[in-house]
Length: 505
Image (cartoon, rainbow, N blue to C red):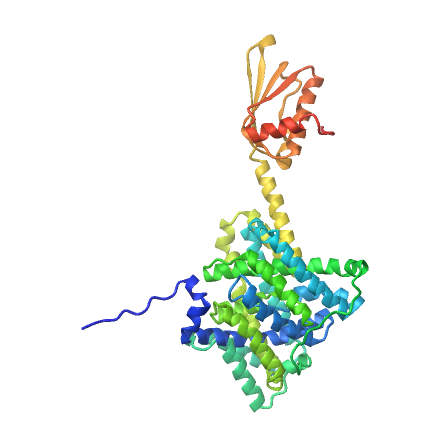
Protein backbone atom coordinates (compact mmCIF):
# COMPACT_ATOMS: atom_id res chain seq x y z
CA UNK A 1 0.00 0.00 0.00
CA UNK A 2 1.50 3.31 -1.04
CA UNK A 3 1.26 6.38 1.09
CA UNK A 4 1.56 9.98 0.04
CA UNK A 5 2.94 12.55 2.40
CA UNK A 6 1.26 15.89 2.78
CA UNK A 7 3.04 18.80 1.13
CA UNK A 8 5.38 20.65 3.44
CA UNK A 9 4.04 23.88 4.85
CA UNK A 10 5.65 26.95 3.28
CA UNK A 11 8.33 28.74 5.28
CA UNK A 12 7.60 32.32 6.44
CA UNK A 13 9.68 33.64 3.51
CA UNK A 14 7.90 31.41 0.99
CA UNK A 15 4.53 32.48 2.39
CA UNK A 16 5.35 36.04 1.30
CA UNK A 17 5.76 34.98 -2.34
CA UNK A 18 3.14 36.53 -4.60
CA UNK A 19 3.58 33.90 -7.33
CA UNK A 20 3.27 31.01 -4.86
CA UNK A 21 0.11 32.54 -3.42
CA UNK A 22 -1.44 33.04 -6.86
CA UNK A 23 -0.93 29.31 -7.55
CA UNK A 24 -2.62 28.31 -4.29
CA UNK A 25 -6.42 28.83 -4.14
CA UNK A 26 -6.38 28.48 -0.34
CA UNK A 27 -3.69 31.12 0.21
CA UNK A 28 -5.17 33.40 -2.45
CA UNK A 29 -8.57 33.28 -0.72
CA UNK A 30 -6.91 34.39 2.52
CA UNK A 31 -5.31 37.37 0.77
CA UNK A 32 -8.53 38.37 -1.03
CA UNK A 33 -10.70 38.23 2.06
CA UNK A 34 -8.06 40.05 4.11
CA UNK A 35 -7.96 42.83 1.53
CA UNK A 36 -11.75 43.13 1.68
CA UNK A 37 -11.80 43.36 5.48
CA UNK A 38 -9.05 46.00 5.48
CA UNK A 39 -10.87 48.02 2.81
CA UNK A 40 -14.04 48.06 4.91
CA UNK A 41 -12.09 49.13 7.99
CA UNK A 42 -10.24 51.83 6.04
CA UNK A 43 -13.35 53.72 4.96
CA UNK A 44 -14.46 55.29 8.26
CA UNK A 45 -10.84 55.79 9.32
CA UNK A 46 -9.97 57.67 6.11
CA UNK A 47 -13.08 59.83 6.47
CA UNK A 48 -12.28 60.59 10.12
CA UNK A 49 -8.68 61.50 9.32
CA UNK A 50 -9.85 63.78 6.51
CA UNK A 51 -12.02 65.62 9.01
CA UNK A 52 -9.03 65.98 11.37
CA UNK A 53 -6.98 67.44 8.52
CA UNK A 54 -9.82 69.78 7.57
CA UNK A 55 -10.27 68.47 4.02
CA UNK A 56 -13.03 66.81 2.00
CA UNK A 57 -13.44 63.09 2.90
CA UNK A 58 -12.69 62.21 -0.73
CA UNK A 59 -9.07 63.31 -0.24
CA UNK A 60 -8.61 60.78 2.53
CA UNK A 61 -10.37 57.98 0.64
CA UNK A 62 -8.45 58.61 -2.58
CA UNK A 63 -5.20 58.77 -0.60
CA UNK A 64 -5.95 55.40 0.98
CA UNK A 65 -6.53 53.91 -2.48
CA UNK A 66 -3.41 55.33 -4.12
CA UNK A 67 -1.16 54.71 -1.10
CA UNK A 68 -2.21 51.05 -0.77
CA UNK A 69 -1.98 50.24 -4.48
CA UNK A 70 1.35 52.03 -4.97
CA UNK A 71 3.07 50.67 -1.86
CA UNK A 72 1.98 47.15 -2.82
CA UNK A 73 4.24 47.50 -5.87
CA UNK A 74 7.14 49.64 -4.66
CA UNK A 75 7.20 48.99 -0.89
CA UNK A 76 9.64 46.78 0.96
CA UNK A 77 7.32 45.18 3.53
CA UNK A 78 4.77 42.70 2.10
CA UNK A 79 1.29 42.70 3.69
CA UNK A 80 1.77 46.09 5.40
CA UNK A 81 -1.06 48.56 4.81
CA UNK A 82 -0.33 52.20 3.99
CA UNK A 83 -3.12 54.75 3.72
CA UNK A 84 -4.26 58.13 5.04
CA UNK A 85 -3.36 58.31 8.73
CA UNK A 86 -4.14 60.39 11.79
CA UNK A 87 -0.46 61.15 12.37
CA UNK A 88 -0.17 62.81 8.96
CA UNK A 89 -3.52 64.57 9.41
CA UNK A 90 -2.38 66.15 12.68
CA UNK A 91 0.89 67.36 11.12
CA UNK A 92 -0.68 68.86 8.02
CA UNK A 93 -3.92 70.31 9.46
CA UNK A 94 -2.47 73.77 10.31
CA UNK A 95 -1.34 74.25 6.69
CA UNK A 96 -4.82 73.46 5.36
CA UNK A 97 -6.34 75.99 7.74
CA UNK A 98 -3.87 78.74 6.86
CA UNK A 99 -3.25 78.29 3.11
CA UNK A 100 -5.85 75.93 1.67
CA UNK A 101 -5.90 72.74 -0.37
CA UNK A 102 -3.41 73.66 -3.10
CA UNK A 103 -0.58 74.38 -0.68
CA UNK A 104 -1.59 71.26 1.22
CA UNK A 105 -1.26 69.02 -1.85
CA UNK A 106 2.04 70.71 -2.79
CA UNK A 107 3.31 69.87 0.71
CA UNK A 108 2.29 66.20 0.23
CA UNK A 109 4.23 66.03 -3.04
CA UNK A 110 7.31 67.66 -1.48
CA UNK A 111 7.08 65.26 1.48
CA UNK A 112 7.22 62.37 -0.99
CA UNK A 113 10.36 63.83 -2.55
CA UNK A 114 11.95 64.29 0.87
CA UNK A 115 11.16 60.69 1.84
CA UNK A 116 12.87 59.41 -1.31
CA UNK A 117 15.92 61.58 -0.54
CA UNK A 118 16.01 60.46 3.09
CA UNK A 119 15.83 56.84 1.97
CA UNK A 120 18.74 57.30 -0.43
CA UNK A 121 20.93 58.81 2.32
CA UNK A 122 20.24 55.81 4.56
CA UNK A 123 17.70 57.05 7.11
CA UNK A 124 16.36 53.49 7.47
CA UNK A 125 19.65 52.46 9.07
CA UNK A 126 18.80 54.67 12.05
CA UNK A 127 16.27 52.01 13.07
CA UNK A 128 19.11 50.06 14.68
CA UNK A 129 19.40 52.81 17.31
CA UNK A 130 15.81 52.34 18.50
CA UNK A 131 15.91 50.09 21.59
CA UNK A 132 13.50 47.21 22.11
CA UNK A 133 11.90 49.00 25.07
CA UNK A 134 10.99 51.92 22.79
CA UNK A 135 9.52 49.47 20.27
CA UNK A 136 7.39 47.87 23.00
CA UNK A 137 6.26 51.31 24.15
CA UNK A 138 5.44 52.27 20.56
CA UNK A 139 3.27 49.17 20.12
CA UNK A 140 1.48 49.61 23.46
CA UNK A 141 0.87 53.31 22.83
CA UNK A 142 -0.60 52.59 19.41
CA UNK A 143 -2.89 49.97 20.92
CA UNK A 144 -4.10 52.52 23.46
CA UNK A 145 -4.60 55.19 20.77
CA UNK A 146 -6.55 52.75 18.59
CA UNK A 147 -8.83 51.97 21.53
CA UNK A 148 -9.20 55.65 22.48
CA UNK A 149 -10.17 56.52 18.90
CA UNK A 150 -13.16 54.17 19.22
CA UNK A 151 -14.45 55.63 22.49
CA UNK A 152 -16.25 58.59 20.83
CA UNK A 153 -18.20 56.06 18.74
CA UNK A 154 -19.59 54.62 21.98
CA UNK A 155 -20.61 57.90 23.62
CA UNK A 156 -23.95 59.61 23.14
CA UNK A 157 -25.26 56.85 20.86
CA UNK A 158 -28.47 54.77 20.90
CA UNK A 159 -28.37 51.92 23.41
CA UNK A 160 -28.60 49.37 20.58
CA UNK A 161 -24.99 50.20 19.68
CA UNK A 162 -23.73 48.45 22.83
CA UNK A 163 -25.28 45.00 22.26
CA UNK A 164 -24.26 45.20 18.58
CA UNK A 165 -20.68 46.02 19.57
CA UNK A 166 -20.70 43.21 22.13
CA UNK A 167 -21.93 40.77 19.48
CA UNK A 168 -19.22 41.96 17.13
CA UNK A 169 -16.56 41.40 19.81
CA UNK A 170 -17.97 37.93 20.50
CA UNK A 171 -17.61 37.06 16.81
CA UNK A 172 -14.08 38.41 16.27
CA UNK A 173 -12.78 36.76 19.45
CA UNK A 174 -14.82 33.56 19.34
CA UNK A 175 -15.06 32.57 15.66
CA UNK A 176 -11.30 31.89 15.22
CA UNK A 177 -11.62 29.21 17.93
CA UNK A 178 -14.12 27.38 15.70
CA UNK A 179 -12.84 28.09 12.19
CA UNK A 180 -10.43 30.33 10.27
CA UNK A 181 -11.90 29.64 6.86
CA UNK A 182 -13.35 33.16 6.75
CA UNK A 183 -11.79 36.14 8.58
CA UNK A 184 -13.75 36.81 11.77
CA UNK A 185 -13.78 40.62 11.21
CA UNK A 186 -15.50 40.12 7.83
CA UNK A 187 -18.14 37.86 9.40
CA UNK A 188 -18.76 40.45 12.12
CA UNK A 189 -19.18 43.28 9.61
CA UNK A 190 -21.54 41.31 7.33
CA UNK A 191 -23.63 39.81 10.13
CA UNK A 192 -24.11 43.07 12.04
CA UNK A 193 -25.01 44.86 8.81
CA UNK A 194 -27.63 42.23 8.00
CA UNK A 195 -29.08 42.45 11.52
CA UNK A 196 -29.21 46.24 11.40
CA UNK A 197 -30.89 46.36 7.98
CA UNK A 198 -33.40 43.52 8.48
CA UNK A 199 -34.45 44.78 11.91
CA UNK A 200 -34.48 48.43 10.71
CA UNK A 201 -32.31 49.48 13.65
CA UNK A 202 -31.47 53.16 13.95
CA UNK A 203 -27.75 53.26 14.78
CA UNK A 204 -24.79 55.28 13.47
CA UNK A 205 -23.51 54.01 10.11
CA UNK A 206 -20.52 54.61 7.86
CA UNK A 207 -22.67 56.94 5.76
CA UNK A 208 -23.05 59.24 8.76
CA UNK A 209 -19.30 59.92 8.69
CA UNK A 210 -19.40 61.86 5.45
CA UNK A 211 -20.24 61.75 1.74
CA UNK A 212 -18.55 59.03 -0.27
CA UNK A 213 -17.05 59.90 -3.70
CA UNK A 214 -19.03 59.14 -6.84
CA UNK A 215 -16.16 59.24 -9.36
CA UNK A 216 -12.61 57.98 -9.78
CA UNK A 217 -9.65 60.11 -8.69
CA UNK A 218 -8.04 62.21 -11.44
CA UNK A 219 -4.70 63.92 -11.90
CA UNK A 220 -4.35 67.06 -9.82
CA UNK A 221 -1.71 69.76 -10.13
CA UNK A 222 -1.68 72.18 -7.18
CA UNK A 223 -2.23 75.78 -8.21
CA UNK A 224 0.62 77.39 -6.26
CA UNK A 225 3.32 79.81 -7.41
CA UNK A 226 6.70 78.11 -7.86
CA UNK A 227 8.56 80.60 -5.69
CA UNK A 228 10.88 80.57 -2.71
CA UNK A 229 8.05 81.97 -0.61
CA UNK A 230 5.88 78.93 -1.38
CA UNK A 231 8.77 76.64 -0.47
CA UNK A 232 9.23 78.46 2.84
CA UNK A 233 5.54 77.96 3.62
CA UNK A 234 5.27 74.24 2.82
CA UNK A 235 8.76 72.95 3.62
CA UNK A 236 8.39 72.74 7.44
CA UNK A 237 5.13 70.81 7.05
CA UNK A 238 6.59 68.55 4.35
CA UNK A 239 9.66 67.78 6.45
CA UNK A 240 7.55 66.95 9.50
CA UNK A 241 5.26 64.80 7.37
CA UNK A 242 8.23 62.98 5.84
CA UNK A 243 9.81 62.17 9.20
CA UNK A 244 6.58 61.18 10.95
CA UNK A 245 5.53 59.04 7.97
CA UNK A 246 8.88 57.25 7.76
CA UNK A 247 9.07 56.72 11.49
CA UNK A 248 5.60 55.19 11.74
CA UNK A 249 6.17 53.10 8.60
CA UNK A 250 9.55 51.73 9.66
CA UNK A 251 8.37 50.96 13.19
CA UNK A 252 5.30 49.18 11.80
CA UNK A 253 7.47 47.26 9.32
CA UNK A 254 9.69 46.08 12.15
CA UNK A 255 6.63 44.96 14.10
CA UNK A 256 5.35 42.96 11.13
CA UNK A 257 8.82 41.44 10.70
CA UNK A 258 8.57 40.13 14.26
CA UNK A 259 5.03 38.80 13.81
CA UNK A 260 5.79 37.01 10.52
CA UNK A 261 9.35 35.89 11.39
CA UNK A 262 10.67 37.49 8.21
CA UNK A 263 12.96 40.35 7.25
CA UNK A 264 11.98 43.29 5.07
CA UNK A 265 13.97 45.83 3.11
CA UNK A 266 13.63 49.02 5.18
CA UNK A 267 15.44 51.19 2.63
CA UNK A 268 13.07 50.10 -0.11
CA UNK A 269 10.14 50.68 2.24
CA UNK A 270 11.41 54.21 2.90
CA UNK A 271 11.63 55.30 -0.72
CA UNK A 272 8.49 53.31 -1.48
CA UNK A 273 6.60 55.48 1.00
CA UNK A 274 8.00 58.53 -0.77
CA UNK A 275 6.90 57.28 -4.19
CA UNK A 276 3.45 56.45 -2.80
CA UNK A 277 3.07 59.96 -1.40
CA UNK A 278 4.19 61.46 -4.71
CA UNK A 279 1.54 59.45 -6.58
CA UNK A 280 -1.05 60.32 -3.94
CA UNK A 281 -0.26 64.03 -4.14
CA UNK A 282 -0.62 64.12 -7.92
CA UNK A 283 -4.03 62.46 -7.59
CA UNK A 284 -5.19 65.01 -5.04
CA UNK A 285 -4.88 62.76 -1.97
CA UNK A 286 -3.91 63.85 1.53
CA UNK A 287 -0.86 61.58 1.76
CA UNK A 288 -0.20 58.96 4.40
CA UNK A 289 2.02 56.22 5.74
CA UNK A 290 1.78 52.74 7.26
CA UNK A 291 -1.29 52.10 9.41
CA UNK A 292 -0.70 49.95 12.46
CA UNK A 293 -4.37 49.12 13.04
CA UNK A 294 -5.21 48.06 9.48
CA UNK A 295 -1.88 46.25 9.21
CA UNK A 296 -2.75 44.21 12.29
CA UNK A 297 -6.17 43.41 10.79
CA UNK A 298 -4.42 42.25 7.62
CA UNK A 299 -1.55 40.30 9.16
CA UNK A 300 -2.72 39.17 12.58
CA UNK A 301 -6.53 38.93 12.34
CA UNK A 302 -6.80 37.81 8.70
CA UNK A 303 -3.51 35.96 8.21
CA UNK A 304 -2.39 37.78 5.05
CA UNK A 305 1.30 37.71 4.16
CA UNK A 306 1.77 39.06 0.62
CA UNK A 307 1.48 42.25 -1.42
CA UNK A 308 -1.75 40.89 -2.92
CA UNK A 309 -3.76 41.77 0.20
CA UNK A 310 -2.31 45.30 0.28
CA UNK A 311 -3.06 45.85 -3.41
CA UNK A 312 -6.59 44.45 -3.11
CA UNK A 313 -7.29 46.55 -0.03
CA UNK A 314 -6.79 49.64 -2.19
CA UNK A 315 -8.76 48.25 -5.13
CA UNK A 316 -11.66 47.04 -2.97
CA UNK A 317 -11.73 50.41 -1.21
CA UNK A 318 -12.19 52.24 -4.50
CA UNK A 319 -14.86 49.79 -5.70
CA UNK A 320 -16.72 49.96 -2.41
CA UNK A 321 -16.86 53.76 -2.13
CA UNK A 322 -17.48 54.51 -5.82
CA UNK A 323 -19.55 51.60 -7.14
CA UNK A 324 -21.07 50.27 -3.91
CA UNK A 325 -21.21 53.44 -1.86
CA UNK A 326 -24.88 52.96 -0.99
CA UNK A 327 -24.15 49.49 0.42
CA UNK A 328 -21.08 50.59 2.37
CA UNK A 329 -22.98 53.54 3.83
CA UNK A 330 -25.37 51.22 5.71
CA UNK A 331 -22.61 49.31 7.57
CA UNK A 332 -23.13 50.02 11.28
CA UNK A 333 -20.19 51.71 12.98
CA UNK A 334 -20.65 49.22 15.85
CA UNK A 335 -19.22 46.48 13.60
CA UNK A 336 -16.10 48.47 12.78
CA UNK A 337 -15.71 49.58 16.41
CA UNK A 338 -15.74 45.93 17.48
CA UNK A 339 -13.05 45.11 14.90
CA UNK A 340 -10.83 48.00 15.97
CA UNK A 341 -11.21 47.16 19.69
CA UNK A 342 -10.13 43.62 18.82
CA UNK A 343 -7.14 45.05 16.95
CA UNK A 344 -6.14 47.22 19.91
CA UNK A 345 -6.29 44.26 22.31
CA UNK A 346 -4.37 42.02 19.90
CA UNK A 347 -1.76 44.74 19.28
CA UNK A 348 -0.98 45.47 22.94
CA UNK A 349 2.04 43.58 24.29
CA UNK A 350 0.39 42.15 27.42
CA UNK A 351 3.53 40.20 28.31
CA UNK A 352 5.36 43.49 28.83
CA UNK A 353 3.18 44.46 31.83
CA UNK A 354 2.94 41.10 33.54
CA UNK A 355 4.27 41.25 37.14
CA UNK A 356 6.83 38.52 36.42
CA UNK A 357 8.14 40.45 33.41
CA UNK A 358 8.32 43.72 35.34
CA UNK A 359 10.27 42.01 38.16
CA UNK A 360 12.84 40.57 35.75
CA UNK A 361 13.16 43.61 33.52
CA UNK A 362 15.71 46.30 34.46
CA UNK A 363 13.93 49.35 35.86
CA UNK A 364 15.56 51.53 33.21
CA UNK A 365 13.98 49.42 30.42
CA UNK A 366 10.56 49.70 32.01
CA UNK A 367 11.03 53.45 32.44
CA UNK A 368 11.87 53.88 28.75
CA UNK A 369 8.78 51.89 27.75
CA UNK A 370 6.54 53.98 30.02
CA UNK A 371 8.00 57.29 28.81
CA UNK A 372 7.34 56.23 25.20
CA UNK A 373 3.74 55.24 25.99
CA UNK A 374 2.92 58.35 28.03
CA UNK A 375 4.52 60.78 25.55
CA UNK A 376 2.80 59.17 22.56
CA UNK A 377 -0.63 58.97 24.16
CA UNK A 378 -0.36 62.45 25.69
CA UNK A 379 0.63 64.18 22.44
CA UNK A 380 -1.06 61.78 19.98
CA UNK A 381 2.20 62.15 18.06
CA UNK A 382 4.23 59.02 17.39
CA UNK A 383 7.36 60.97 16.47
CA UNK A 384 7.38 62.81 19.80
CA UNK A 385 6.73 59.60 21.72
CA UNK A 386 9.50 57.63 20.04
CA UNK A 387 11.92 60.58 20.28
CA UNK A 388 11.18 60.90 24.01
CA UNK A 389 11.73 57.16 24.47
CA UNK A 390 15.02 57.14 22.58
CA UNK A 391 16.26 60.22 24.46
CA UNK A 392 15.36 58.62 27.79
CA UNK A 393 17.15 55.42 26.78
CA UNK A 394 20.26 57.40 25.80
CA UNK A 395 20.34 59.31 29.08
CA UNK A 396 19.84 56.18 31.19
CA UNK A 397 22.44 54.29 29.18
CA UNK A 398 24.97 57.10 29.51
CA UNK A 399 24.27 57.29 33.25
CA UNK A 400 24.73 53.54 33.63
CA UNK A 401 27.93 53.38 31.57
CA UNK A 402 29.38 56.38 33.41
CA UNK A 403 29.50 54.33 36.60
CA UNK A 404 31.59 51.62 34.95
CA UNK A 405 34.76 53.77 35.04
CA UNK A 406 37.13 53.04 37.93
CA UNK A 407 40.37 54.76 38.98
CA UNK A 408 42.92 52.89 41.13
CA UNK A 409 45.80 54.77 42.79
CA UNK A 410 49.15 53.35 43.87
CA UNK A 411 52.41 55.00 45.00
CA UNK A 412 55.88 53.50 44.40
CA UNK A 413 59.19 54.75 45.77
CA UNK A 414 59.97 57.32 48.41
CA UNK A 415 61.06 60.94 48.57
CA UNK A 416 62.04 62.53 45.27
CA UNK A 417 61.76 59.15 43.51
CA UNK A 418 58.15 58.59 44.48
CA UNK A 419 55.67 58.12 41.63
CA UNK A 420 51.87 58.04 41.94
CA UNK A 421 50.20 55.87 39.31
CA UNK A 422 46.51 56.08 38.48
CA UNK A 423 45.07 53.22 36.40
CA UNK A 424 41.87 54.32 34.63
CA UNK A 425 39.58 51.46 33.60
CA UNK A 426 36.45 52.03 31.48
CA UNK A 427 35.01 53.94 28.54
CA UNK A 428 35.53 57.68 28.80
CA UNK A 429 33.01 60.04 27.21
CA UNK A 430 31.11 63.15 28.27
CA UNK A 431 29.09 61.40 30.98
CA UNK A 432 31.97 59.53 32.60
CA UNK A 433 34.89 61.89 32.03
CA UNK A 434 33.29 64.76 33.97
CA UNK A 435 33.75 62.82 37.21
CA UNK A 436 37.31 61.82 36.31
CA UNK A 437 38.68 65.19 37.42
CA UNK A 438 37.69 64.52 41.02
CA UNK A 439 39.35 61.09 41.28
CA UNK A 440 42.91 62.46 41.84
CA UNK A 441 44.64 63.53 45.05
CA UNK A 442 46.37 66.61 43.69
CA UNK A 443 47.76 67.98 46.97
CA UNK A 444 48.89 64.64 48.44
CA UNK A 445 50.54 63.12 45.37
CA UNK A 446 54.33 63.22 44.82
CA UNK A 447 55.88 65.47 42.18
CA UNK A 448 55.54 62.83 39.46
CA UNK A 449 52.18 61.37 38.48
CA UNK A 450 51.45 58.76 35.79
CA UNK A 451 47.92 58.38 34.40
CA UNK A 452 47.78 54.89 32.90
CA UNK A 453 45.04 54.64 30.23
CA UNK A 454 45.78 51.18 28.82
CA UNK A 455 42.43 49.83 30.11
CA UNK A 456 40.30 52.72 28.83
CA UNK A 457 39.30 54.44 25.60
CA UNK A 458 38.80 58.12 24.83
CA UNK A 459 35.62 58.75 22.88
CA UNK A 460 35.14 62.51 22.68
CA UNK A 461 36.56 66.00 23.22
CA UNK A 462 35.04 66.16 26.73
CA UNK A 463 37.50 63.48 27.85
CA UNK A 464 40.47 65.32 26.31
CA UNK A 465 39.36 68.49 28.08
CA UNK A 466 39.12 66.58 31.38
CA UNK A 467 42.69 65.24 30.99
CA UNK A 468 43.92 68.76 30.16
CA UNK A 469 42.25 70.04 33.33
CA UNK A 470 43.88 67.30 35.43
CA UNK A 471 47.34 68.08 34.08
CA UNK A 472 46.79 71.81 34.58
CA UNK A 473 45.70 71.21 38.17
CA UNK A 474 48.87 69.23 38.91
CA UNK A 475 50.93 71.96 37.22
CA UNK A 476 49.51 74.50 39.69
CA UNK A 477 50.96 72.35 42.46
CA UNK A 478 54.32 72.25 40.66
CA UNK A 479 53.86 68.61 39.70
CA UNK A 480 53.90 66.79 36.37
CA UNK A 481 51.19 64.39 35.22
CA UNK A 482 51.99 62.14 32.26
CA UNK A 483 49.30 60.32 30.28
CA UNK A 484 50.48 56.87 29.07
CA UNK A 485 49.03 53.68 27.64
CA UNK A 486 46.62 55.20 25.15
CA UNK A 487 45.52 52.94 22.31
CA UNK A 488 46.09 54.16 18.75
CA UNK A 489 42.70 55.80 18.21
CA UNK A 490 42.75 57.48 21.62
CA UNK A 491 46.37 58.60 21.13
CA UNK A 492 45.61 60.20 17.77
CA UNK A 493 42.66 62.10 19.24
CA UNK A 494 44.72 63.17 22.27
CA UNK A 495 47.59 64.45 20.10
CA UNK A 496 45.17 66.35 17.90
CA UNK A 497 43.17 68.04 20.66
CA UNK A 498 45.30 68.11 23.84
CA UNK A 499 45.97 71.68 24.95
CA UNK A 500 43.76 73.12 22.22
CA UNK A 501 40.43 73.02 24.04
CA UNK A 502 39.51 76.18 25.88
CA UNK A 503 37.73 76.06 29.23
CA UNK A 504 38.02 73.27 31.73
CA UNK A 505 37.81 73.06 35.51
